[in-house]
Length: 325
Image (cartoon, rainbow, N blue to C red; front, side, top):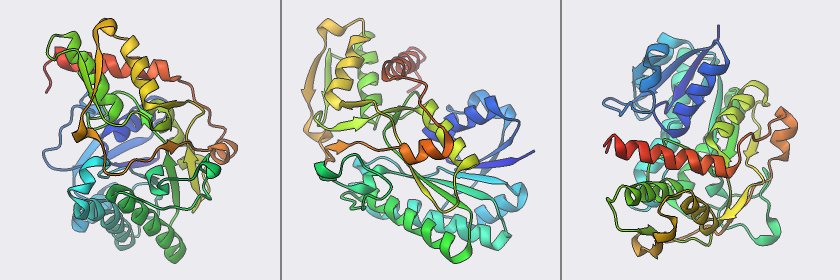
């Protein structure tokens, strides 16, 4: 039986990946969490997995965990992943995302861990790509324009270096916008859905506060994204980078309007720009070409955006009903 170790297992993508592996394999799942982490995303599976307290900034904790688990696969999803806060704390983003990855790889060296590693970077690394270079491919040059993107670009360079220097078995991915339940309200769609749920329950005036709505993105359901991670781990070529995305392309305004249509208050809701939600720099067009990944793994999306939006809105309705904030 394969042993899988997931960093960031309590987070958005990590918890959904845990669900996918539990439902579709007999692999043994181990996860790293920080002390006192909120376990709400994985509470339903605590009896089926093994959890360890650790931190990417503490190499000794990673060495201890690797010695105990001796994993065959490591999904390295632990990261600081929200763009907007990165302007206020750029150093901790770089430490967690880049130095944290170095700590993990060094711990693997110390323990002679030969596990295959999957890392998840971000298309934010590409920066503001000119229109004539859209869609974005694995060959598009990176030019990060925010501290989060810079930290993930550094993480990616770490991966390239350790693969080249030590022949570590590392598969790299860059997943474009992926959405679904459990994403925190720093994310635009989660924030929209949370506000709609509050409006429906009479907890907020029927006004949705937003940032820039003109940016264009392609969207993938989180369930499709974690299945893509799994296929990349199982079938991807060591050292390669794979762009993961879909043909579902919309502006943020179009997505918001679709989400509002799912609400019982649709005819009463208005939209208001909140200057605090507008980023210092914004990437206007984010469209990826996932043909290389599709050819390598046979992956295709299974969920459309309307299904995704409905699951997100119902998630926040349920949270508010249970008073979980």
